[in-house]
Length: 160
Image (cartoon, rainbow, N blue to C red; front, side, top):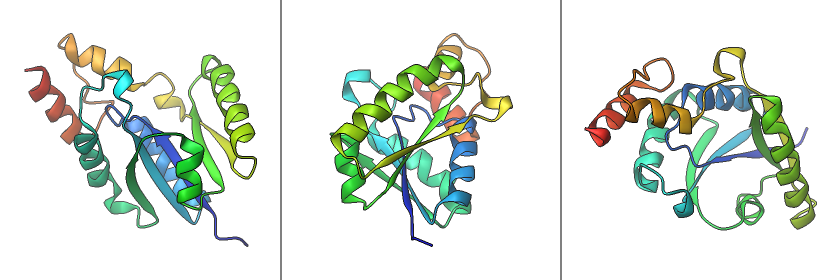
């Protein structure tokens, strides 16, 4: 069997329990997983790239085959630099599918050697997204069920 490296990309602003669930499942399927935190300045993230990397690194202690790296630029270029043959994408609902298939097609066109593998969200996380978590936090709601404790504390501190 090949030694397969997969890239799990995202902005992770913030990382959610759904992301962590998907990561833990991917870690069972691939020899090495790189959680790739996109800089994404156009999305105007709440947390800096360094903060998002720090949150993720705290979550990886239980996953020795997973590493975390920040990146900017084209995902397929980053995948090639990491010698990754697979891009992992999570699907929460049918509404994600159309966009994700379009993205996978474009990535395949840019680099036909990199495949995209879709992993469906666990049912308990199918409705969780970073943007919804941020909105709930900004409106004073409790995000305890959706994010790790360190992220909850950072959101509360950032929002003040």
